[in-house]
Amino acid sequence: MSTADLRVGVLALQGDVREHLRALRAAGAEAVEVRRPAELAGVDGLVLPGGESTTIGRLLRIFELLEPLRDAVADGLPVYGSCAGMILLARDVLDGRPDQPLIGGLDVVVRRNAFGRQVDSFEADLDVTGVTGPPVHAVFIRAPWVEKAGDAVTVLARVGEHPVAVRQGHLLATSFHPELTGDTRMHELFVEMVQQRGRA
Image (cartoon, rainbow, N blue to C red; front, side):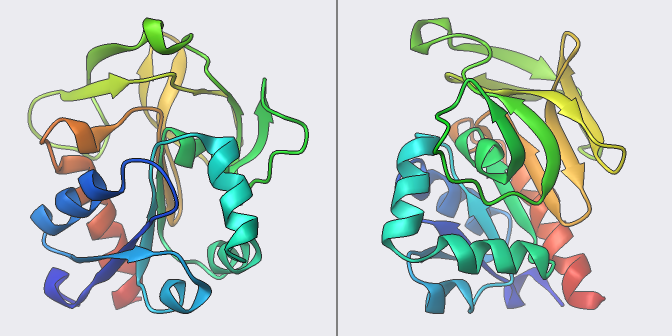
């Protein structure tokens, strides 16, 4: 399956939707917005963008997408979550709301706002396993980190001792926002994951 044959969705309820659409198109995929279960059923992979995780979780219920997304992840749909998307994919969240809905599927415990509040946002150059070339310039905005990862989870990058990019099979997650930098290599990595599933 070539990248031109891939339809990759971006969950378009809240957050950096346009930026992810642009990065996916630059990576060679057809990129579409996803707001309804029928639209979810028509994609080969899905990006969960950064934004506000509790707001996105509430909207998932309102748009009747929470259970279909959980089923899609369980069925092997490739999903990439950045920042809030990482939180939504986690099996558990620290410092979140007790009623916060999660999609789950990624065997990690994530600490919400781990690096601090908006004023503590920062940028860093990271070596990311699976990404060739120079370090990835990463933008962290009220970012989480992975507090604990299961045995099936591969850590791709860290800030200090804290994992900030992870992969588990068909699931990819980053604490940072690659869609904001013009560097499409994280999206290219995800598109490759979608291609691999299409060939399987």
